[in-house]
Image (cartoon, rainbow, N blue to C red; front, side, top):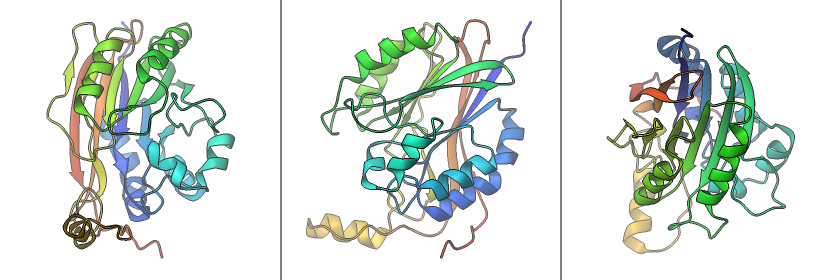
Length: 269
């Protein structure tokens, strides 16, 4: 019997110092969980707004195999050439045609070929193409190459994430939620073999309001006017999920989430 496939997914990395945290611990985490594939969501890696080539290079050098992003990637113009030039840096698949980058990639791992897909929700989010129809079409195409398909579902509404996972249950290996930065307590295997969690959580400074400096977040809520986004400092942690699956069928066997402390990262100044 083949050894199972294991994917390690690192949740939304917030800021350059969080990138340094993840880079410092990624090798250790990969060994701890015996991961064949490492995916890192880096949509907040550059000052909270998408990754640039610098952050992507740091994460790839540390052992990331695929980087996913999200809606904030478009707010960093340095990310656009990165999306165009590196197929292992994904943006949500269901943005309209004409945008740079790709929403899926198939890569070789020690357990064979594995596909990674990213989708984005529409509830409380920009009005883009349907993630359900786009995800189903892509899953059917990708299954011609491999049964192992890991989906990053980047969305605000919990119901939309759960619905998407139910819709793709049995057609993909895992649907892992990102974007809200708060890890949920609902990791499970759905009836037809798809692993799911509503949100894998955030990697960065937990002495914060989802990665933002608390004082700035309070000013925004109290004044109801815009204030410059400032990254938080302190209580550094890495959050994510680990999924184990059968290689031949792509069915998930186990899912667990984690949130581990990491040492104070060096300054990026």
